[in-house]
Image (cartoon, rainbow, N blue to C red):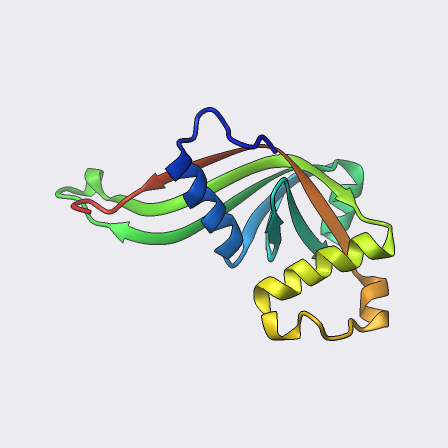
Length: 158
């Protein structure tokens, strides 16, 4: 990932990073042979990459056929009633990430990625042993970030 995208101010970059570290899930868009496929997934962000995990199935089949992905990560979504229905909208903060999902095959890389995910969602369990059977059946991906953008739309009057 570019250290400081030229289109983001330092404050926008700070807000984008905070959103990437704290958002509960990302909508991950990928391509299947029959068309687009989007699914919400939990994730962990480390600078330059996003870790995802899944089991065998539709997501892993789509990623095996085309590893290009786009993630939409949002927070603070709230309906913002305008003075007329045509002025209604939503306030939000969002990051859009584009990149390539790489299947992690090395056990050390996989465990590092899974521990990053555990640390985000269950920090007290970060040092707990990982179940060997579950670890074996878990597919872990690192999305190498090519580009990302940040946008926010605050509520009117704020």
